[in-house]
Image (tube, rainbow, N blue to C red; front, side, top):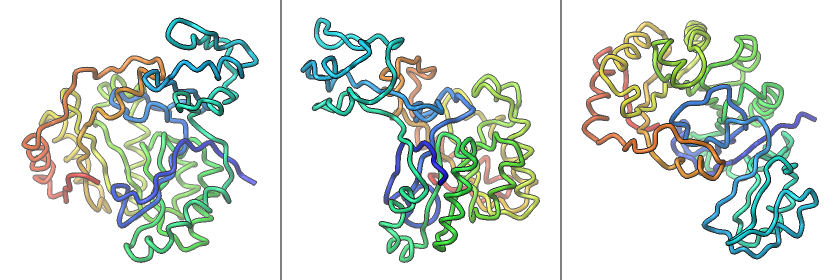
Length: 301
């Protein structure tokens, strides 16, 4: 039975495709976007997150750790990451839930059981299931099995992807995807490398091929102040998208700082510290620029 690593399941999701949906977040992503609000999604391995403000210094985690990765310190436990096996024993006994494991191995049947709990809502609202991440195409065997199981149950399926995957992976699953939610950061390749760590040549090529083959696609553009919110960047996106068939709409997603604290908990630096959310007038102006290319533009998604 196919197994995979999931780090979250969001029920009653209304921004990940049409209707009321359940969104399943698969762990692992080949990009490292400066603004990623789910940094815990990037690593393809299980991680430990520590929320210091919740810790009550009870020492339970120290007592249960068999590898000596935790020891008593002033004000709370001190950690030695080099000794940590990410076994989850400390999280299991953390009364205050200050320690939490990010990522759990699960089966297709287990995930589908969670998805089917809200089947009545999907039918009434025209919703379904969305597979997101991370980048779900990184777990291609697991994703393929989940999509096939979803279609067997006659569920509407959406796949949120950055598009950075071999075409063979996309080709394998595309027949079981009703809607692609395709993230587009910037068109300029050098800027894309700077912002995400990878070229966008494959991303644009896969987007073009999916569109050419008649798949329904919602483009998603996260509007990041100082990154891609200038008119030149938006015009490049609009010009590229306007030449693609089957682009149903472009969704402008406003940057938010909700994930900033996660970087500290994961002991990582946040590249956009100090960046503020774009004002409503800037979002409206961006929508006007993209709409000028004859595209259907929606704020949110």
